[in-house]
Length: 308
Image 1 (cartoon, helix red, strand yellow):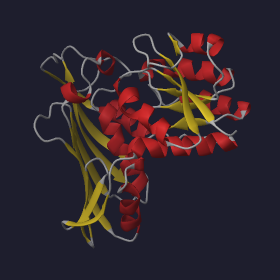
Image 2: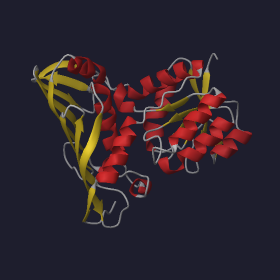
Image 3: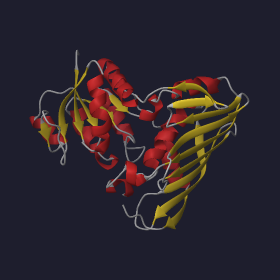
């Protein structure tokens, strides 16, 4: 394969803001079509649905599913059945078990299934992982707070079952956490705040631990105004390590050790091209399992209705 011809399915804010430019910047990848009921891109073939794309569209090798998670499983099945490689925006689905048949289907078809965690590709994440590997970690705290009206304007799907609510950004923090810590963590308790008119939480507090008892806590909130916070702080025997800006900056005791501009989605597509060349898959469900367990264990409270 000399060029991975990709169609974007679902052309909302994240596709326009991140995916289009990332594909254009990566050698070996080209954007060949768009499938969306509500939007198109000038100069590219456009189709209303993935079924129409697969039946009537130009020759493509892969699809990048940027639709809401509630519909991705069926779209991935259609794409894999048609012999296409599949990239899944995060979260990869509305539940953990629905991914297993997709993994098996991709393996049988010798096609790539790539469940993406873009925040893991933030520039300071790997330096943080390497630094923590040689440290004794005493505790970890996540503060991931943003204004939903700024980052998800008019996106009603996020408040429906399967939309995850505040865990849509919160799972980004969990994807970093499960990458940088040397041992797996699990949820021991959770508090979930649901708006009275919504089916997904607007805020959540998680208590986690690893098998050795490492205390890990997380605060997620969609109601943050003013400065936004996407920070992970680890107390260690070598100082206080702070990973801020969603993983773009790493500092120890206020000394910056790693910082670079955001190229997360470029790295995702670089990885996708590499995987598709070999037909290998990359589906890590650890962040999604933590969210699922938070819903299982979470004590729920009702708060004021949310009005976009």
